[in-house]
Amino acid sequence: MDTVCLEESLIMVDLDGTTNEEVLQNMAKNLYEQGVVKESYIDAVIEREKTFPTGLPTLGCSVAIPHTDIEHVNRKAISVAVLKNEVDFGIMGEIGTVTPVKLVFMLAMDQQHAQLKLLQSLMQIFQNEETLNEISREHRKEKIIDLLESKLNH
Amino acid sequence: MKKKTILVACGAGIATSTVVNEAILDMCSANNIQANLIQCKITEVSGYLDSADLLVTTTITGKDYPFPVINARAFLTGIGLDDVKQQILEEIKK
Image (cartoon, rainbow over all chains, first blue to last red; front, side, top):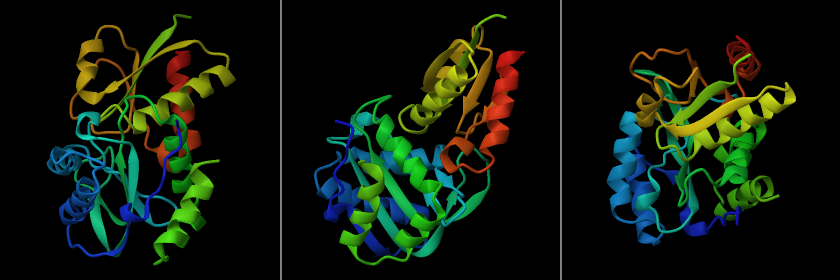
């Protein structure tokens, strides 16, 4: 199956945090509490972000796609957070540059080289300024799920 | 023209390299080009120093390689994508 279910318990709105580590910690802890990932995922995703930053400047608001190795994951899922205030993330593929991130898509992937369609659809969303801005202004979890699912699972 | 070997790498070898790999495959077939694509983690690139012709990566490389390196973030954000595609095509056609 290439589709992914977006669960309300994995959507976080108005997430508060002053550093990206704090944001990652909060999101990963929630994934762990929901049984999606193992406890080891929390430190692993924070460490991975330090070595390989995932911030992406887009035409809309900047996004980040933190993720880590499949061995820390129980089942495939995506957690989405709309940050209360933008938080700096390192820019993917660059050294020492940051971008103010408003939306975080934390990926829990359980297979290597798979999930192609899902990932492609996600990147399509990143190229859609309007959708990104719409999500970033949204406070209702079910609305965010509707918006994303209409783009992800078609 | 020798068939080129292209490495497509990211940090975990799971997410972004999957998307970039597919995009390059599409690009090659659209341009009638045959190429060997190898998707890997950036830490695995050192195993291909003798066999690869090009590295396309979304992540920091942090060292020098004996082949050209092209940043592939544009495949994720769409910003500057045409330029990057052009760069890759030129390298493959060399």
